[in-house]
Length: 134
Image (cartoon, rainbow, N blue to C red; front, side, top):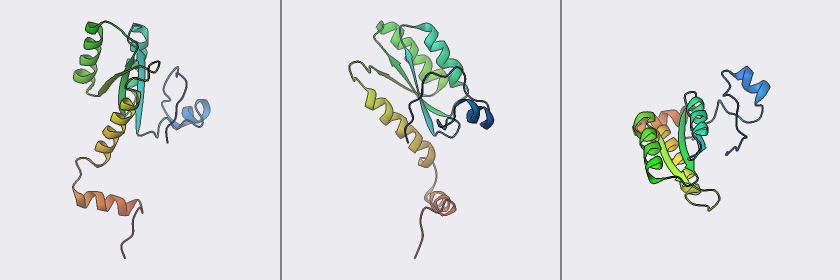
């Protein structure tokens, strides 16, 4: 399920806050998040930094055109210090938008199934009742 929500003033700290202020979004139970900021607006990057500290798996997408140096700095910060996926895209020109979501889904899939041995995946599937053996 993909949920597109409006900009949040804050991320809910507990289930009660989520239920009262963000009902229907399922923010705390999401497998991943795509954080989007404007490369030309430093305040939007600061906002993303604050929200990012409270999240799980994420992909960060920088939108809009900026100087090559500014894009390179932002990309390096995200990749090296935050250790998360970084994709530049433009919704206006439909450039790399689907790539951003594709990479996020790959990261979530790798997190869920990437480093587990086959026996661990089978046991987990049995626990979640996703398969039956006859």
